[in-house]
Amino acid sequence: MDTEEKKLTRSEIDEMLKEVEEIHRPRRTVNRNRKPKKKFRLDRILFAAILIALIIAALYFGCQAFWGMNKADTKEKNTTAGADSGVPLKDDQYPEITELVQNYLDAYLIQDDEQRMDAFRKCVVDLDDLSSIQKRDYISAYSDVECYTKDGPYEDTFIVFAYYHITYKNIAASVPNITEFYVMRQGETRNVYIKNNIPDDVKEYISKVSEDADVQNLKKEVQEEYDAARVQDENLDKFLKDMAQKISEKKK
Image (tube, rainbow, N blue to C red):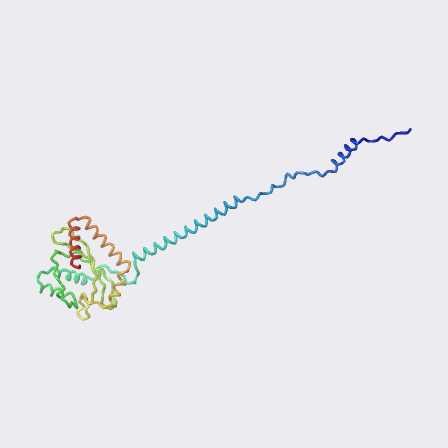
């Protein structure tokens, strides 16, 4: 039986082409295991850079402050303690020196001129100008003498830091004071004397040991005691102010 070949219409042909195209078209698949790609974030980089800069600045200024404190502490210690000469300060270990200083101070209170000069001659080995020694009419007593000593630059010599109290006339309270002396022991008699004319090398030595921590602390304690005495007694404070004013006027 003859069959007649069936012809396809234009629309049917288009439909077939679409099916073929759909079959052979490559399909995109999604990889759900793949991590999403990170985006470039400029704001995060800027934030990190600023944070690092702040940390560096904090460390820098922190170190500067620490070093500054150490320098200040070192400076303060050097100022307070001073240099150390290695010569120890002895507390009132020589009764003959304490007696010498007491006699020397008391000589200023002797009213008779000749007796006063004789008293000074017994204390000072080279008192050349006796006319400069005047009695002290405004002082009634020197008391509580205590001598702190350092060995001098030569054998039988001493640097003396004499602590004592001064009582002024018509003032009940006394004030502490401290005075430096250069004392020598005579070879034959072994008596001690204050040396008035001090050589330059000895002056340099005295200046050196006076900067020692023990001497500076002693002077600081005496100054604090002196200030406290003035605060506690108004009459004493007024008297000392008036006396300082008179001394200042004489110098002018």
